[in-house]
Image 1 (cartoon, rainbow, N blue to C red):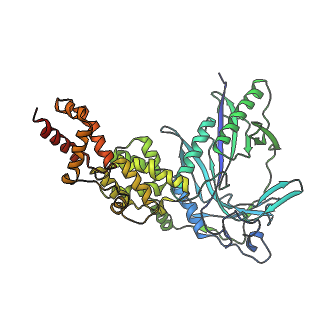
Image 2 (cartoon, rainbow, N blue to C red):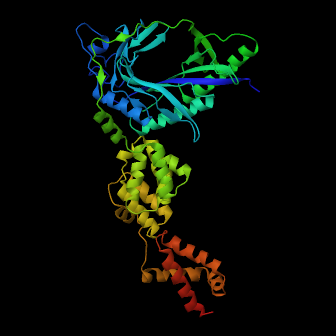
Image 3 (cartoon, one colour):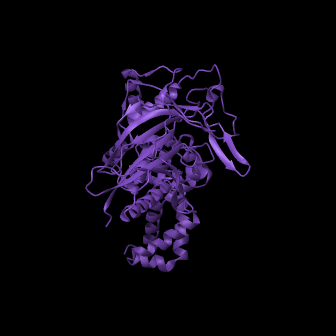
Length: 477
């Protein structure tokens, strides 16, 4: 049994979903040809003055409120000085002593939450690419708006860290704050981990882990570091305060630099930026724009629609999916049926095509109309799915689609009567079996008629017509 308690805290950088950078009009999209989305303000050229991006501040406030943080009435931008090629000004504009928000929490599971220490706004640095010929600098990302979310050291296992990041990403995506894509760099995480003896109150020596490019990688790196530190302490050694980089190929962390002495970034208030003063009315307006959060929506779906947790999890993956589901439901459909079609038909099309549900070619109203045709028996489930895929490439109603596909039901008795006679003539033994009381034999006759009509004959009409035909041929039993 491990004699130590694991203590983990996370520092998460999240790129805000703005069109332009934090202090300049340059596009915020970091991809594209290197160094093509850079403004003089991002470079800190003489005479330029930064101006905060209102949309970025609003999104940062939205993130804070979604996480239960308290937005401060006054916060300040500071200059964080360090010399590195990806930082053209020689300093990064961030927030230090007076951040945008304090407190808040992220749910880990139904019983535990991890408190947040602070949330502050800052600009991103550029990107370095190391090659055999030297190091290349791309400043497209320099100045992109970020929020840094710093947790308290409340996490007690690598799996809890994974759960924290999963829930954090879910909330921020749901609220439209960020794409939170670790592979593309719009969400980045550093993890701090230490061990202390069970029952102790003082934390052990903290090690920072970097180069973590996925949630699974965060968990693997923390699991390795947990084992490494346990072995060091069990052998009577001392854990060094250091920054370690994770190497996923070798499955181990490696020392990068010592943290025995904290670097002096020489923070001071940025003289070009006045204090950021946020009125209570502005906070209230952003809070009102949040709408339902994922857990609130899930609880409402559970109570109102009586759906399973598995179904609800799909519906609250993002806000637009749930909104689309509710638009279909507004036409009076069965919740479980709509959910099944959304999960089995709509979402796979979106995944394979890269489309957004907002631009999905079948409107909620048309899907509701299609489901009504299936519910009333005008279409079989199989035919309904044929109509669905037909509508993906055609702007027409489900009724027009089923006619174009030749799937409209044949209800006319006189049209079907010759086919009923042909079925009993082709399968006389089945007809005789039905006459003698073996109802199961009717299925073979129904199948004969359905094949003759390519599935278009109405099952109810077919059933009654066959029984009437057999009665007429054999007499009432």
